[in-house]
Amino acid sequence: TSHQPLKGKKALVTAGPTQEPLDPVRYISNHSSGKMGIAIADALATAGADVTLVLGPTHLSATHPGVHTLRVVTAADMYNRSADHFAGSNIVVMAAAVADYRPKQVADIKIKKGAGDELTLELEKNTDILRTLGAQRPAGQVLVGFSLETNNEKEYALKKLHEKNLDLVVMNSLNDAGAGFNHDTNKVTLFDRQGNARELPLKSKKEVAEDIVKAITAMTGQQ
Ligand code: PMT
Image (cartoon, rainbow, N blue to C red):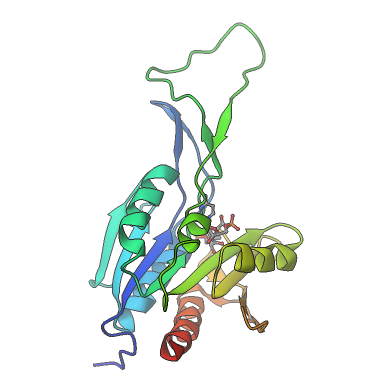
């Protein structure tokens, strides 16, 4: 019977990588395990929210029984499932590492090794889920995005905060030990629209998720 400040709120979370197929045996992806977004889904459910988790390919799962998980493979699938739940959500947190590009052609049989030494792949852009949905966010919704970079981290994080119409951006950098993909820990800085920056020390993804949920709860109270 813990305190449930988000009781009655609906939340949407994206997590994990996407896989963009080239042929029936190969795909383009990234190193996301889903841990960070899953921890956020669990923390939101613990705070009482009714949570839908749109989860890219990973062997991990949410542990809180209140999290409703929709498993997806490609960025296009993730966009479609997220779009289904976006307008009805009071809280949205996008922690997924979505492929920015997909192979332009997906072969329906295995691509065979050719005679030449090179193979050129053509890629086309995926929809930016957060940017597209952020442009049509309903009044009163709390919208949170992530930013993962290897350089100019703060500049890019603030750009995403404004261009993707977010209330909060969670910045993590591959330059910090124990931060980013697959670790059980993360080191993040939270930037809000009022210009506040809160740099948190390295801590478990569970604790980072709890800090993010506290920040969300404070913003939910204001709206
Ligand atoms: O899953 P883990 O192994 O625990 O690792 C956690 C994490 C590093 C994946 C996570 O902390 C994180 O940073 N997630 C966002 C990764 C990312 O791809 O960030 P980005 O800066 O490229 O994207 C910015 C924001 O736009 C993100 O909220 C992303 O979900 C969203 N986006 C990006 C591209 C796209 N096509 N659609 C999107 O919605």
